[in-house]
Image 1 (cartoon, one colour):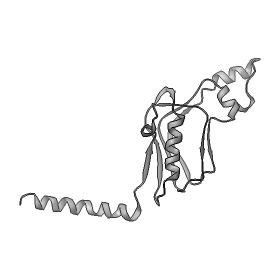
Image 2 (cartoon, one colour; image 1 turned 135 degrees about the horizontal axis):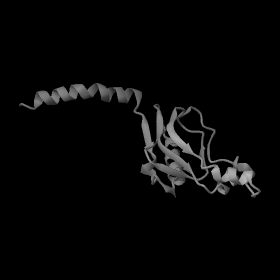
Image 3 (cartoon, helix red, strand yellow; image 1 turned 90 degrees about the vertical axis):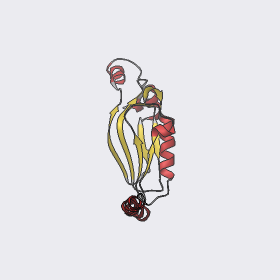
Image 4 (tube, rainbow, N blue to C red; image 1 turned 180 degrees about the horizontal axis):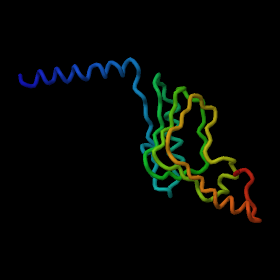
Length: 151
C-alpha cells in the first residue's frame, strides 16, 4: 500500500511527457559511433558516416532528425552526403573534429572533401574541420604536380 501513491505520482509526472512525444513525435538521433565510426583519427570513418546519414535521410518522421558526431577525431576521406531526404528538418551536430587525410590526391580526383548535395532543411552545428591543407599548399607553391580539383 505504501508504494501506490508514489507510483501514482510518478505516472502523473510521466504521462504529460509521453503524450507530448506522441503528439509532436520524438526527435530521432543517429550517432555515428553506432554505425561503426572509431573516432581515432586513423581509421577512415567515411563509411560509418554514410551509413548514419543514409539511415537518418531515410527516416520517416514528422520531427527533426539529427546525425550526431560525439567528441573525438574522425578521419574522413572524400564524402558525399546525398539527398533528397525524407525529412526536411535535418541537423548534423558535431562535438568532435572532422579530419581530412593528408593525402591530398584523394580530394583532387573528387574535387571535394565533404559535400552535401540535394539536401533541403540542413543545419550544421558546432565542431571543428581540419582540412590538413598545408601539404597541398606546399605543393602548389613549389613545382610539384598537384591536383587541380583539390582547391
